[in-house]
Amino acid sequence: MYELHSRLKLVLYATAIPGTLVLSWLTGLIGLPCLIIGLLLFVSFFVVLPLIFRSSVTLQRGILFLTFITYPKGLDLTNPASIGLYATRNFYITVKDHDEDETGVRIGVWHVLPKNAVRRFKRELHVEQAYDEDEASRTANDLTPVSSSIGDNNEELQQLAPSLRAEFPVIVPENEQLFYERLLRVPGGTVVLYLHGNTATRGSGHRSEVYKLLRQLNYHVFSFDYRGYADSDAVAPTEEGVVRDAMMVFEYIANVTSNPIFIWGHSLGTGVAAHMVAKLSSMKERGPRGVILESPFTNIRDEIRLHPFSRPFRHLPWYDFTISRPMYDNRLRFESDKHVREFPQPIMIVHAEDDVVVPFHLGYKLYRAALDKRSRSWGPVEFHRFDRAHGYGHKYLCRAPEIPTLVQNFVENYRNAIY
Image 1 (tube, rainbow, N blue to C red):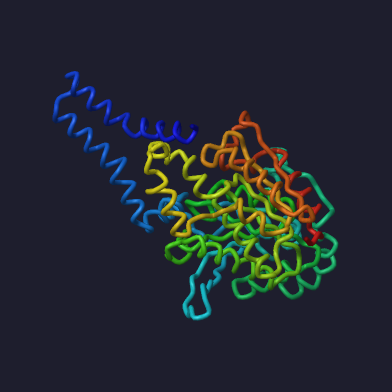
Image 2: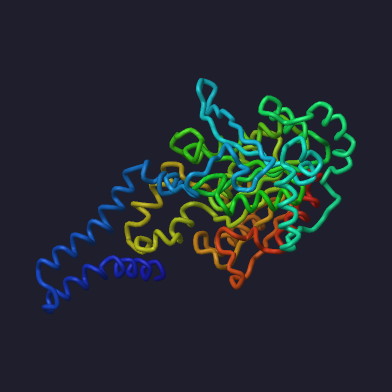
């Protein structure tokens, strides 16, 4: 009975517009030319357009990844200091999709140094003024996060500082990579690999706010642009491709340091994160110590149905046939509700109730799936909701006063735990 009711409702939605047009013509409210134009517009928008979408994997990828949306305009990604990320190294990694791939895909990466390292080496890094101005601004605005003595490797940095200063009296392009990697190897540190969502670049405003927050917590931060984005190679992104990009950046970090690595994914990046960590687990490779999922969804099928852009189409009887099923068949799935059952690391989910891009209940649904399907011997799963009254929406949970403490507690609880 419920299925019949649902089908009848779909038919009603699909025929509401043409039925209204025909009824208006029959009652003389509109003329025949208006009826014909109205029906043609309906067929073009609600039938032809979905059929074009079904037949074009290029269009499906374009709508999912939105690589053509870039902001802010004119951002020089080779100069992170232009957006306040001083003491940040820009470099590139070549990702080979298979053994026979000779050229590979070049992706742009940032490495943001933690605050305690910048404080000790600000002269060598030529960032004294930027650092002092930043600290003065934070003090004036009372933005200093919770302090911590766990995982901030201050003692190790203090012991190694004289020898590092002797070896690197000044940081220049020729020794920059070596210096940053030396700091990354200092024992007791923590690394966060940030996986951004679709649109724009690793330098977009809300993303740089996350990096600055993590820097203040004394974490090394890595962020990069997937293939097809920003200054990474203009290769059409796929799910397998962007997951491969993330794995290669993770592999680079893991090859340089034995310090614990955490993954932070936002929006589409949560799908990349869950898929990547599941893949590392299946390959028996070294994985992260924990995974933070900000504004996550269960899978692309659920997400696109509830996305604001799909509102005109979601009630059409042919919606699944023309939109969601073709994306699934073309391996654009990001099935986080499946992947969270495939890796044992602890998970922390944070989601705002007023998120209109990824509805709050999808994040909670993912949390329930993780609770119900993961082994009891695996790492815990946390869920933190943020009231809609705060107005954090889809992008600005990093501004919540409690976020630094939540992240810090999660990192400190699991930085030495292996599941």
